[in-house]
Image (cartoon, rainbow, N blue to C red; front, side, top):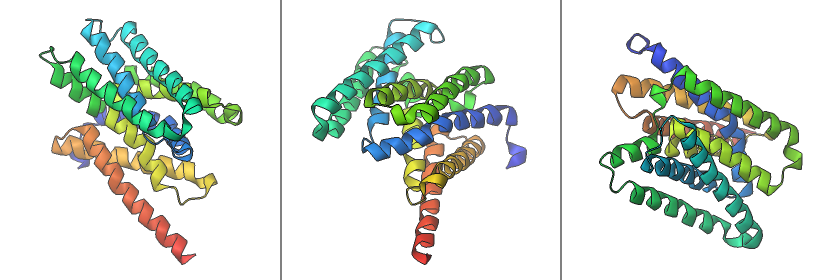
Length: 254
């Protein structure tokens, strides 16, 4: 397989995956802890709606306006969810689900008159990670470095609003690289696969699960000529099952 791949394409894609995992693994563990599993999917979809809205207004796809639209939409959703959590905490998860479906159908409505609408929607869902370039990775890496520094240094002081806002910024950047489906998978699957590990080792284990999954998925998609985002999601699920079984066996043995 090694002889069949082009590492000038595989390399940037894999590094992009590692950059995404750097923030998504710890944030995913926090999401599970808070019991708001679908917040990532909802905010990712809202950020995607911002991108679609920018395209509908014929803004430059690579321009600053698109980024402002995506971040603004995600931040508005985060602030709204923080408000609903305080006002109606018992129904927060259903409200997150409603937000997701509104954003998803809103995107479909905005793309209804676009002859390339289905193509744009597919790119938003499964991403274009295999065509990532180094020039698109480094700004996200710098942003994530700042978020991680704030996360690990100031997390004990975090309130719900700070968490939601940080989450919105991170997801907005990720969804434009790896797509909505892979954002959700990167947040939830490594966190879920490592729930049986003690806290001190869980973060590292989550990173390993994610990194191995990205590498396997990227290589398979390149060799088999299949959509990369979708293959990575399935690879991550398979790796998570194996890791989960190993952890379960060890706990039973102990």
